[in-house]
Length: 478
Image (cartoon, rainbow, N blue to C red; front, top):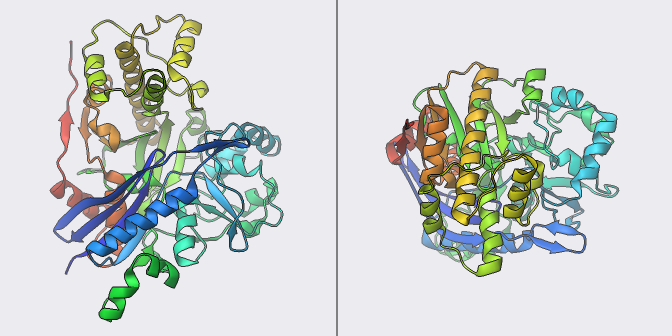
């Protein structure tokens, strides 16, 4: 079976990248061709994603990739819940950011019609105030034809086809977690127009070929004319929720594992065959989101490295650039006990001065506030480690999965202090890496669809194990 090359567009909450992946039954190689920032914009009407700038950078990255090698397929993933509204062929307004304050009113309006307990039985999602259905409650939907989540929006712009990929659609709160179909009764009860929810597709489905104008913009028309054997790359649905793709790339060798996909957010959970819709699951604020090959990602959202990155941004506004590796080393050297706070406290969600908010939290809870920046960083990482460990234990208890090992993937796997403290809190091995788990999962699902490899999730994970190094952290006792 010959191998081939695909392009992964991976859009995170703070940055984006275009990666080339070459895959065969025995090879998995990934390399970046473009990286770019994802910086939101605040206007008089709130916080927005700069989606057109993101799209421009995506096209530029794909053009670079196409110049380097023929590409068989393109897959697009991003963060969840946020969307664009489409009227005709046009985007109606700029997509709002999930950290925008407007979502609060939507929560009250939805819960006035569907109680939290009923809602959990209907969609299986933990309560997050920015879930898509709460956001939609704040919109004027008259005249809107389609709602497209961010990866689906970019797929629409480059193929002309409107679809909703299932793993990301599962984060809207409007998908039935058992059937994997739009929850018609919930949509009707909330009064949303049924027409705005497009056809659902599963990871591995072909969305379509590139529009001729897009192909020309990527520079594909020239070599297509020279070599008629070459074909336009197709756009393939992958686990377009970035965590769904990241979980594909967890280098697990047995089913007894939990995962922490750690970046801006920390998504902590286990993989199941069917959802858990119990009252205990709701009380623990656990979510049932769709995974690749019909798996369920039973997980809890933890605030993640946003706490650190937003704190660093605050300090940089005051004093200029921060040497983060040096600051982390100083935090690792802190020996005095530091405050452990609730990393999921709602006050930490909006952008702003997080060090001040952490100090206020400590004052309210009779904790000694961090007295220096290294202590503040240590406090943040200790608090995240505690939140991660508690979520793993709860996931295991609710699901019955015996967790022997925890895989920490994504950008957070590079944070040695976080990995070690998490292992210490768990009393279990933490296996860190791969860093680019989301892009790897994106590439693997595309490659399987193109026939460059075969097999189930376990076969894809075995290829990750063979091709990527990881680091093991064991609990240290004092």
